[in-house]
Length: 300
Length: 340
Image 1 (cartoon, rainbow over the protein chains, first blue to last red):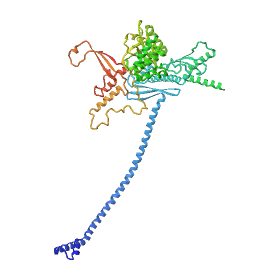
Image 2 (cartoon, rainbow over the protein chains, first blue to last red):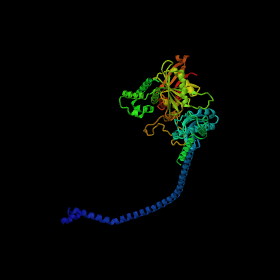
Image 3 (cartoon, chains in turn orange, blue):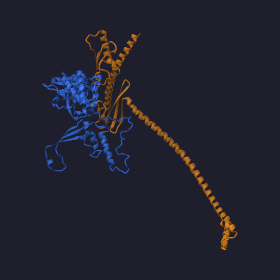
Image 4 (tube, rainbow over the protein chains, first blue to last red):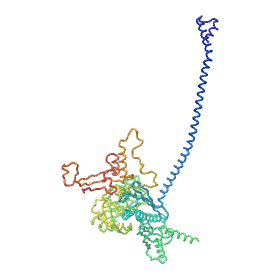
């Protein structure tokens, strides 16, 4: 570019002869290059062409291999997948079974006596019930040794556990547990009746209910009709048999100075009989119902 | 009953009650009506408040029994201020079922004391779990009962145990024992080697109520998976050199003391009457024929928790001596150790 500018500006070649020679030399080398280019280009071209062919060949070969590999992998993965899915369902079903068994074990307490193995031995759970109501649960943790030992327990202190253990624990564990079960169920039943009387039939009681830890002596003053004119009776219930929920001795007395009329005496005797045969709260429920009946008769 | 001692007992008892508890205790006593309580200014100085309350009590003609009831209630609120002993009763073999009648017990108990001591004040207050608190003010044949040093007895019906506040008047103890035994239809009574301020802990120990954790299928966290106290979040550059030993100590401690809160005792006392034992032959003490007598006493605000923490803290070897670990199991914190 410079060359061209120099010539056109001056009209004369700049730099003299040597410069001119230089310019000519450059021209010649350029034209020579141009003549050589196609040749080298051709050589290059052919070389590149060969290379391209080679690469293409290699590519095709690799492609073929990949396809083959993929095909084989696909074949194997389909097998693996089917194994995995069956494994999962197996896992799920085992999990479900385990939870089922766990639930059954938890539900065993409804049978009354259930237990769980421990590192020491077994922990037995006695669940008490009365009239279809689930009441308290009590535990005895046993150590499997000779002699069999109770490690700790939640049996109330007034239940004769020591007595029962002394009799049966070493000789017949089943009998030990059944006897304990009897005592605890009876205690829970008696307690349930006393609690119900205190809470549901307060209106019928003339004073507080006298009771004790075992609920085997109950003493109270009551009226069969809370609003009515019936006489207050004193009832004294003794449960000498600790394995029962009905009293062994019942005395109903009249706390008054006048003598009882025949109807009143009949009533007193009838009440005594009721307390002997029916659970305490049921007796009062029947009193309440009789009261309802009487009201109905008044209305009509 | 004279009103003077009643008024005095009321006044002295009310004086003891902290202002924060005044309303609660008076309401529990239920001797002054709501209206009467409303007329009193509870924000005044204690002396004037006490005066106002005593006046109201005199208006209501408080009897000695009413005053005694207030005293029992105060003691129930402040049971830790007394030191309690435990007595164990036993029946003869083949006894009939215990048909415990609370009213019969109370009248029998009172009768026995009154028959022996003309001058005695006996008051009762029913408590929960079919128990009764008894207050006894002792007198003599010639002296009126001392209302300011009463003894208290707590008895749970149909159990063989009675808890009594340690009284200075030790001479009346046999009579008290007799009254308890006969009234509760037992044959014998024995004082246990167990004493503490914490009445509820004594009850937990003798009723065996202190360990109430049981393995069931309902429990979600298995008992074994407790953190062994080696914090996982601790710096990983710290390595526990004796990890196995630490784990062993934790395991042994857990086996002996369990996971439950320990009942509270303040001391354990060991009276030793043993001959000196030494590994070295010779020495003056080794030749001594007579046993040495000494007293070892462990004290703590919470003795059993302190013992439980000894091995994990590295202060003692695990397992601890059975003389220390048997305390709740045997129901003893007084021991006499003699050579066999």
